[in-house]
Image (cartoon, rainbow, N blue to C red; front, side):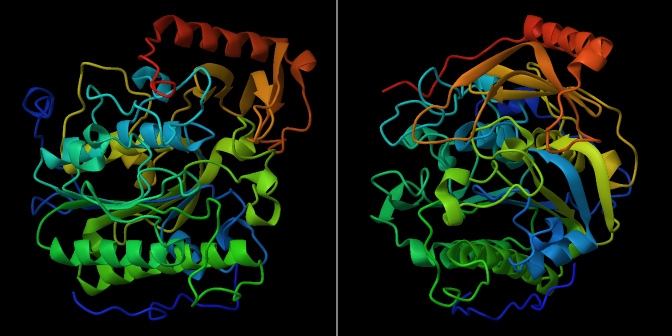
Length: 455
């Protein structure tokens, strides 16, 4: 899609430049064809908050201008069926960093759907994060932006494999709202208008400082989660209004990261991934985003709540392409481990599968994907077929009504990505096969201790 704006990098300028590890991390040779034997590649994960499937130019938005992300997609691999593992913040971030369904670690609750500012729980020590695994391999690690995996000191990023942390402990609508460096509060409340700019400055400085060794940067933007606050340099500039202003600044931020990688000679040795934690917060009206043609949004396990933009960029390694394979954020953990030459821990179940073959242009074998809302299994997908056992509308101030379906609703997502037409009565064999997948999954599942309702 051609837009009237190009990806400029100079809009804002700055001055100035567990014990587990020994047991389960095994160094193996770097996957053939990746940077030879020089050193393992760098990794950058950029994660937006409440950005919908339809909120970027390269995913069809007509008025939000995202030239940097559009360029990233044009130069890399853009997935059309890329999923977050949950329709709300905390569990989706858990899945990204651990490669596992949140129910396995107990990052779920009976009443709450995310951790709150008075929660006493967090990501259990028994879980292994991407940062912990890579740190054992000699990587420099940094978390910049929103965390939301536990705000007490024992749960902060610096205790979960990250050398440094600069950001918010949870969502920007929770009180108090401190901006933290390491484990110390810098300001409260955080000045939201300049948050994206400051995150970007921190990310760029980390890349430059660590350019001579392998690094992992997790840049988790606070926006476009509400309340929305636009940087004065972006305010009033987008045809989409305030929501567009903040998304366009996130796009600028992505451009700054890619520009820095190029300038530092790191682009061809760095894999960058961009996605979002869940779908758009539809009840926010014009301050919420869009899932495009997909049904519903944040808080729902219809496609609009969990199918997200998924862009992978690595010059010289990933050819420009559009990929229609089903993939998810849980695939990131095993992908990075394979590329870094780190063995996968064998003492636990992983729900993600490495994307290395796919990123190199290979095909992916189908596997089932399970849609969870908290500890409740809502739906299952296999190939183009999705069976909805339970449905619930978008996230709102009150918990929406749960609707159980027996037999399940059945959608062919290739024919009907908007989930408008239930075809269960015409495909009893498909329904039976998907229900068998559910039985096998639930029989083998071992849920963790719920964390969200601890106070």
